[in-house]
Image 1 (cartoon, one colour):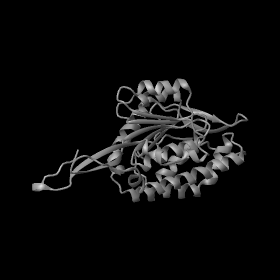
Image 2 (cartoon, one colour):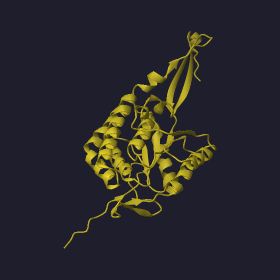
Image 3 (tube, rainbow, N blue to C red):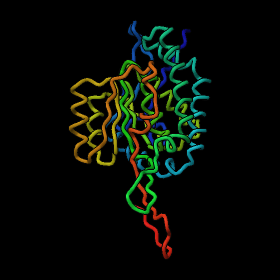
Image 4 (tube, helix red, strand yellow):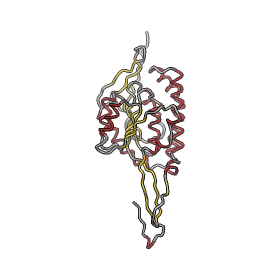
Length: 293
């Protein structure tokens, strides 16, 4: 008797766990020939809210880790991705990617994680400065994470674009809520499985699958999200993000980038998601007084 293959249900990832979507809905992902590949959760606005709550709870612990420790954890993600590289490649091929492109996408993605792992304990020194002031003070500018960031990668680069947006976000001490590619969602959830086993605290990265038309507005309008980064979005979705982000003055960055180029990585992808804090300190400590703003 022919054995029935059990189709994997790719669940969402919230707070370090893999729940089924609150909505109870799912959609069947099909290959180019129409055969079913997997069942994928169809996320809801409640899943977005739950993800933001988890991300906010995780901000203090993640940003409070030493930069070197964050670097170790990101490098561990790269190690785990390397060990599961064939799975990433097979999933991309199953979703319709040519084999050569799938291999290149996975290789570039792993290398990009390593790249940002190297920046974790260096970007503050490079971006920070000692500022000249017309008084007897030291004046320092240092970079600190902004908090919770929404990540919206483009559809046609489901792993490399995701990694290129997500890694500078968490390398800089932020936490993230990711809207995975609707058409090619498998890479994002497999990445969630990697993250879950890579010493990343629960809530630092949260990944939701589903329809961008349902999820983008509640993420963009959420008052506890501090910023949005995205790529490859059409003008309608760009305008939606800009409009919904006004209420709490979210910082919004929508990149039009080929992530395979050298311009697809860099220090300033980290800097975009940082707040600049300026500290004043008197050069002469008179009577034990000091000031910091």
